[in-house]
Amino acid sequence: MVAEFNGVLYLILYILMVAGFLMYTYQTLFTTVDWLTKYGIHESAVLPTRVLGTFVAAVSLLGIYFLFAGLGGAWVYLAYIFIQACILVVAGYITVTGSNAATLEGVKYTAEAYVSPLFFAIVSAILIYGLSDKIYT
Image (cartoon, rainbow, N blue to C red; front, side, top):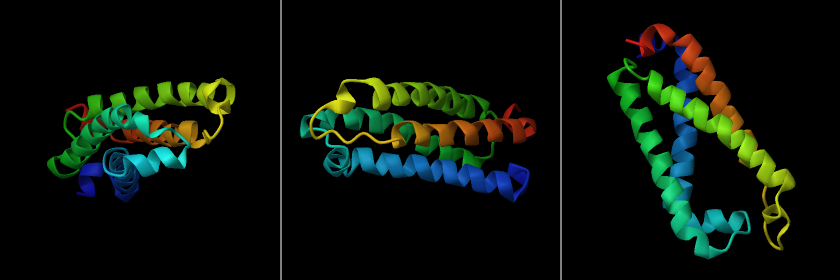
């Protein structure tokens, strides 16, 4: 498995990335109300939050698949993560720092809205570069 990831560093980064997606999958699908409460968001947002969770769950499951099946063809998976994370960095920053929603009573938006996707963008970019001999086959 380590050889498939061109060394232990890329394997650890990959596992950390998938673990992050699994954490958000769990929070958005299984502890949805608690996750919403953490940010001061009304419980009526359960359905859209779970819809979001299905997308994160799909990325998590694909990540587990590539971990065990090999990285051949995983370029589109990593490219999707990179592009989506870059978009969310911008959208999250704008929402936290400049939107009316962030100033509503009880809402507790944090820098997590753009710092977390920044982590995923950086890690996926490193993986795309470091695993380019494996993912494009």
